[in-house]
Length: 441
Image (cartoon, rainbow, N blue to C red):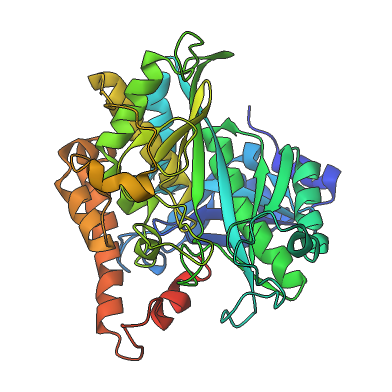
């Protein structure tokens, strides 16, 4: 039986609820609901006009309703009067097929038919920048190799501590915070969990980091490549499949600790990586990060070829420990739900078709890629990944052709807006249009 939000509000002194969903572009949409109305909202949902968001609807469509998942409730640690809820979208008594959380839940259900569930963790990189978005916030953060710089990290101690304290209070199990490879860039890690929980937390983490940064007079951005000379924001995902308490990816008899199931799952991801880059790298700016030249620090840390390796960060997939692998393709603009759904869909394809990932490589792919001309390259621009997605019959069948068509249609509209806008210099390494439209992704 679902938790009673009205009773929880009374016990925890919650005065308002944010009933929230993300659209196909990953934009967080919400209504602020007073506690007096939460009983009706829990039953019937909060009403939204789908056309007003990045969903393929018209002004003539009926209202859609965001029905909150009571299990997703997070009481804002920095404002305990407010409870945040993730919601599923419904219209005309049915789930909205293009609702990203619904898409993920459908893939979770498909995986459950094999008595499997996916556990995952994400590494969300972000920059702390000036409120106008023109530069990093810390003028003293200038090292050419700033990764793990203690001084730069501790100059942001008050903010980092507040974010980490919030995660501790929420029971997420945060375990490390660091200054990343770019000046002004940070990463904060918390424990892996069931993939739906991870996706909900991913959505909330971005909201929390942005909110607390503003509280400290700063701005946080997860934009893939806000500065052309600095390493971009990745969002690496760590993946494993479980049956109850048994990690089905673990095989201690394998050199790298992975089972045959893990290699098949990995092989499915590699087969569909070009198409799914439209989900994993969904913005025009994303392709400033993919295939990027060396940055100020000496490396872009982003993949360019579809390959996998052991504990080697120059490949799209690495195996850092037995029983899991890390997918390094995604960036900070990825929709948290489509990220997880894309991994399951392609991995499940790999299981069903016993996909062979090919030879594991331990080379430095950044310097030796010319020695492997047989490897597929990742798309160079959003148009290319969208075309790959449109042409991929398997992915269209898995997600539904109508959902894929809607996604491609909306993304192509964005590309048209970029190309038709004459107010900015398109020759800039990172254009003003990209910053205006992606800094707050």
